[in-house]
View 1 (tube, rainbow, N blue to C red):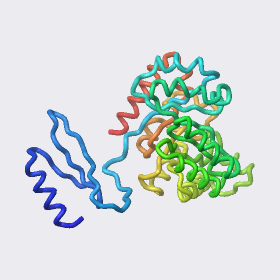
View 2 (cartoon, rainbow, N blue to C red):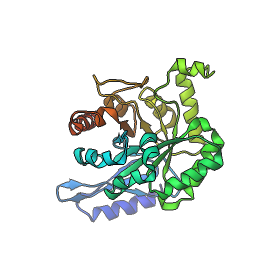
View 3 (cartoon, rainbow, N blue to C red):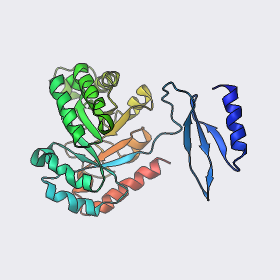
View 4 (tube, one colour):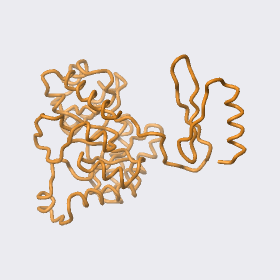
Length: 291
């Protein structure tokens, strides 16, 4: 940034009492003006070239997986959950049972949809599926990284052509129900952690917005790929809860500390005797861990 721009900003700020300027990165400054007793940050980009620095790690959000048999079960569950939860996952079970109609209950409440269909097909078919999902207003959509770079690029291009309705394309690296023995059976001989990182790096190079990774790989992904990719972490199990068919799990606190942007939790909330209390406990653990 030129010295002249900084001087102009400082002169401008001198006219506004109690307002300060802090630097987030080489290209972004933050104005922090008073408003009553609260302070609000306003990011002011002063360079035109892209830059991926962030002032701070974004707050981790909870996604509740609607692992439900039909759409009739959606509203009763939503009525029980804390309003702080804005994201909900619709996966294969519910979408196959009800089709796009199962999204209506979430749309009517202006909630955000994570459509977890794990698309894995030839590039042309996946591109058309992404375009169809975009028309339903979903916020994030999963594809399998194992579909290859060509398929991933086709998904990204199809999303980009959807304009303001474009979903974020999130690539699944290695299912959390798999371990090293499962990879060996598939003829994948490299260590699971190396395989997962390689798949994730390939997917990011193809242009996807983020990755699905287990709690055991989140820290490595964040270290290797930096702050830009969205990390969506399933396999979240509060301490003492049943693991079920998941093989690579972790606690909410661990995933938050390791840099996950979204934690996906289904059965520990949906099948709980008191879903509101279960969700509230996880949200509290996330908040404490985020500092």
